Image 1 (cartoon, helix red, strand yellow):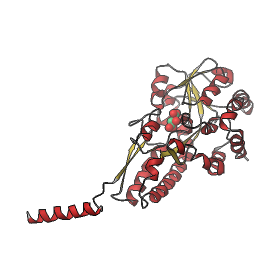
Image 2 (cartoon, helix red, strand yellow):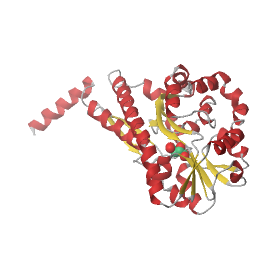
Image 3 (cartoon, helix red, strand yellow):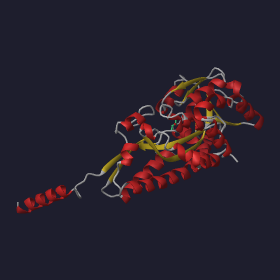
Image 4 (tube, protein in one colour):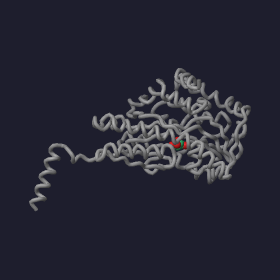
Length: 327
Ligand code: LMR
């Protein structure tokens, strides 16, 4: 009994002194993709690094596969304090900034090297803070990769997409891109795509090799065109209020852990784009069409005029800077 009283007294003193009894900070990291993807692996790496470097101070809970929040809700939830980190695709910030639409312009980046150059350059870095006034802070960019087109019919020429319904992310640029080829774009959450394809409520979609593979879209799409016509990359984002309010001994450690986790995810992204394409090819379930230069040029000619529609909203300077990263 005396021992218990002593222990309670000691605990009381610690509480009074504000030490040791502090609860760990819980960081909920919500995302929509599978664990075996660049984003899924990056989130787990962040958890591992953050918890091992800040034992007892930080707990990271990772929720994949839209388990906690889907596309539409995660940013609102973040501003309400219900989730602390997410990494939505750059196409899902329309409500908060028009600038990030630059990443959706069709046929803008020739490869992932150009994407990296633009993101790490002054213009890309400035964009990280472009939503701070709205309460969102970009912690860094994470790659997934270039998008491919898939459909229930072969898409060799732009006319082949005419009249088909395509699921798109919540981006007006992507809507305009599909309208340019006479298709019908439908904004739908990622979590619904498989079922929509399977039930033929939609005819096609656009995504990266890793998403097409990990969510089994290839099993319900007969044709994939290796078009590399656009990008799915992510903005790792947090609430500015939460991040700026972190204790001084915690924030730099989390910053560093995030940098390393992103580097880890980026390495996987490159590897997965190749290996998941190969897995789809080997499955024999859907056919992969590689466009000739002349065929690709036709898609570019029809889709690229979309840039002009959004130049004012995005800013021509920003578009020029992105184009320059191809050199
Ligand atoms: C999509 O909605 O197709 C993608 O943004 C999903 C993701 O997070 O990769």
